[in-house]
Length: 357
Image (cartoon, rainbow, N blue to C red; front, top):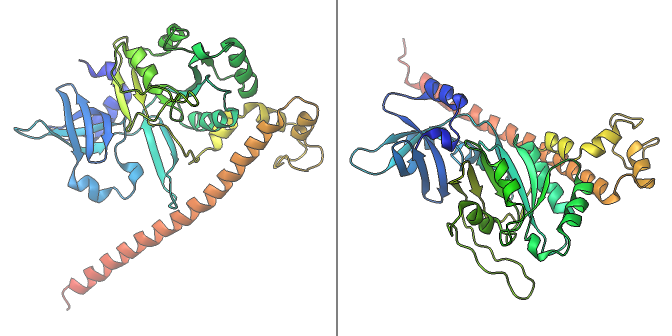
């Protein structure tokens, strides 16, 4: 099958022409596992791992291949295996700060066109969680949309859509059901040939069930909801890119328990476009919307134009970004010191080995 169906474009063709050596071919990362990858090339699908040189020259995890990446591979003679030599420049990426104490970027998916933030309607939609997911979706460079799944379990899906739409601005919101088929035609219209979409959301909102419905078969394992609270159980254990028979690719992801921003300044501005628009009327350009005089945002809250919970969520994300920026600066300085030590060590060895006159 042509790589065009998998999202190959002139952008990647040009990048490949500049970086590939004779005998190497392009492929797309379909699955990322602890011990390696599965990639798709015109020659077929292959298990793959990065080369020793790649491992030596890549200092950070964010430089390693992720699901959705286009990579340069070499096929191993007489073996159905591939070696990854390089990652082609990414068009878009969905990132978060990696869980744990270290300030590291974790890229969840690359080269995506659409980010579908998934929330279930078997309970009241969590607007604050949707805002956070939407912020990262906007930051990715892809087009965001919100999918409200399990619409068959909601008494009034249209009212739920209206509620979310009113709180979250102009982002498209679709109520969808894998059981009744509601909203599926509208969703399929967004999944064009050559486009790549990713499903993001917490465990149990029906991402794998939705992927199966789009694929038309039980491609991914799912588990029934718990009887106690109707919540789904965690099923997906790794990210996987799937080519849909109707065109387009979709990436199913495990449920995300922790979602910290990585570089969300643009995402905050886009996800909170309503707050940013009101803030343009503030007296001070650096207004924090807390207690400053003539603050248009505080006035909007007082007059009922802006939801106070939305403003508090905006404040929280701005504070989080400020803290993250400071931690990233510390890390950058530490990286620079490590690089200087390597250079100094190399120079000492050079002068030590140089013949004396």
